[in-house]
Amino acid sequence: MRAVHQERHLIDRIGWLCAAVLGANDGLISTSSLIVGVAAASTSPHEVVVAGVAGLVAGALSMAAGEYVSVSSQADTEQADIARERNELATQPEAELAELAAIYEQRGVTPDLARQVAEQMMAKDALEAHARDELGLAGHVMARPVQAALTSAATFATGALLPLIIALLVPGTAAVWAVSAGCLIGLAALGAVGALAGGAGVVKPTIRVVFWGVVAMATTAAIGSIVGRAL
Figure 1 (cartoon, rainbow, N blue to C red):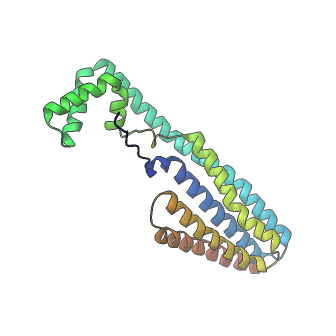
Figure 2 (figure 1 turned 90 degrees about the horizontal axis):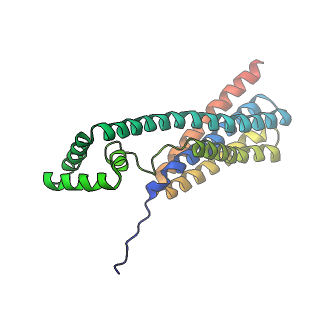
Figure 3 (figure 1 turned 120 degrees about the vertical axis):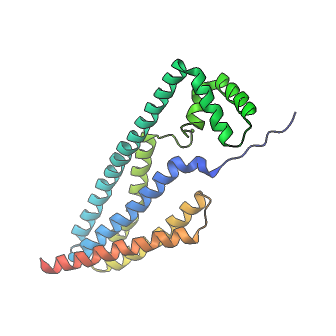
């Protein structure tokens, strides 16, 4: 028996990887920026910690709700297109066969062979063939609202924990520098891990994530300091 060559592609991870990286990155940057901003405006450790906890909870719930609504809209659109294809296959099978054959021709298959391939694909599973080759809907790119929501909430909370723990351990004005340094280290690690999980180079994604983290925290700290002095 001939051995079957099996491959595992990194694109299979795209469904959860995007939500995970976005959630952790947002949790780390937004909570760090919030803590840094409050710490720059107030010397009360209590206020800083309360702000951090509030940011963690509110951010995680917001990420979950936002991801669920957004990805649900995508899922609704996908299901509408699939329902339309199902109806067209039932009412216009020959036109759908010709359409699928034309797709294969555009990819370089000869007309006769394209027709044969389309016939065989539709004989096995016509709806799956049209969903994949006409609509571009495959298992690894289909919208999963619940998975995206839970992943975003969990990773946001995980990212937000780092600056919150640092704020608890380093109270007072020193928290500004400690949280900032911890956030940059966390962002660098997150950028590297995300790049490795996606099979990309490490340096560019890491620099990109750290740069925007610096911009966010510096801006928030400056505004917090100005508001703190004004009040």
